[in-house]
Amino acid sequence: MNETEALVKRIAEGIQEKKGRDIVVANLTATDNTVCKYFVICEGNTPTQVAAIADSVSDYVRIHAGVKPTAIEGMRNARWVVMDYSDVLVHIFVPEDRDFYNLENLWADAQLTEIPNLD
Image 1: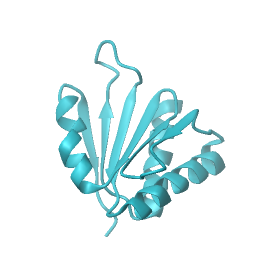
Image 2: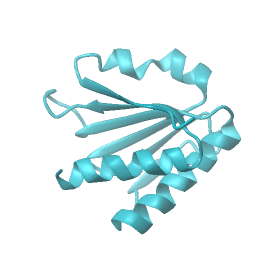
Image 3: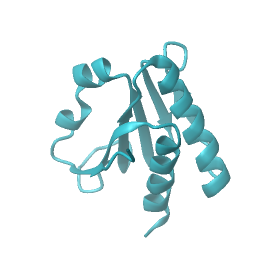
């Protein structure tokens, strides 16, 4: 497992710490002209949970991988939070916004891996 794959694993664990659901990892390494190597997409039931998931990912990854995000956007409304880890972008949605933006379909040519929910 390379450094970026290890980061993706830690991000997923941080999401699961706050019961984030329906985690999908989009591997973009074989896709041309992308801004990063991976997307990690998940959802929380409410804006409060979305914000808690983002905080958990930030803390968990900093503690377990020694990495901080270079930017976090969307915390004010917490309906769609994006965390930038350079090679990995984390997208945390409320369900209706995830359905609307449908990133998994937008990047359908990427290899998509679903991570099972813990419960």
